[in-house]
Length: 591
Image (cartoon, rainbow, N blue to C red; front, top):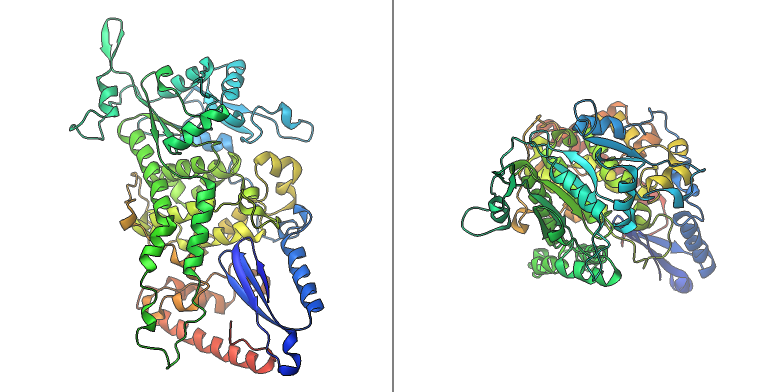
């Protein structure tokens, strides 16, 4: 038996039917994909042929160069949309730069073949980000050196009502000696003072205890003999306290808030990439279809009840707990900015995993633009791609090392966070689950160039994805009606979802879609159809059959028309399957 494990957690098995004469030639190829799909392929051949099939799969799945990926040969005809995110345009929309706000500047660094990495201030940062105009170039460079990987605190969003600023960075280079940096202190002070002067802080914690918010409210400074309450500033360290303390031994760690004015530090307890990888692996194993389960008449009446330890096994994976902590930290940041008018700095260790999750989610809660299809594209480009989430290492495109410790489902986990938001507050989002599924699939498909490479510099100067590949947003925005939520309403106010584990759900369509027994009944009004891209190749997206198929997905629960379409499709699929099985000598009984 030959087992092939794919990077997308997909498992493929190939079964062989043979008589006793060729029993020694029976083999089964199993491929386990990154998208949790398990595929079994039956092969009736000798070891030499099976090895050739194995090597063919490996050569296609793990090319010697990233430029051999599908994205570099995929040339569709729809309009190119690499321009969906323009830093100058988006930061002006937010209000951070432009004629109405002279307090900020768009700091730029050049990405080109002529500029070596060593000459870039922050190679893993965007080509342009926002910093206070009060700092000169020397101060900016000094502040950057105080942060891991030179990922200095950068402003990424401003609250339209309170003027509070969300900033993001990596951890400080404080070390055991708790070293400080005067320019980093000046930078955070400028962010702290960014809120509207007329906004009065409100205590979110209640008045029953002496909380950090109350201590800040009670602390005052004298300005011209007047008692003035300083505006608070919050640091949301996405790590746990123990992890941050351990990094001190490496010369890093967390801020000493005594060096900063009216600043409070909180830990969010979101665990690292290794924990997330192991957690999803445990979840995938738990959800794997039971090969011994059958609906045959010989099964006892209790067989369909399933594993009685399912819920406890789910708890042991810790997956929903991790999702809950990401949402909890995001809501906390949004409330500080909305109700207290306080600016917030978000960071983890290097500021490209948990930081991206929290910043993007918080902004979606506060900014209704990011809840549109175009705005969702912008926030992903801004918070994930330009700020250097290491997609290449986390997804491991072209990497045959299944045990690579840099692999982790951080982006998939964030999509699941967004999915939970759409489940709780569906009318607030212009898109629905289909867009999230599309992005989850094409994170691994390598059909588009967005998710190849670790940084903008990698994509711009080395891979040149803008010239050689297609943006995923070209497809999404061209076919936006395929992802549009028919219940969408423009809701201008912030969203306050529930984030307790009891209020969250497992993203079943992502984790269980490859298990036919887990699909929703056709009477539920739901259909799991994810054939985006494949239909384009067949040229059938615009014909009557595809339109009718799409209309069945959007039909309301219990709609006679929708159920009729589904019944016809099921009958056609059964007829096609029977005809195909009659023509093939292979046995598909174990698939």
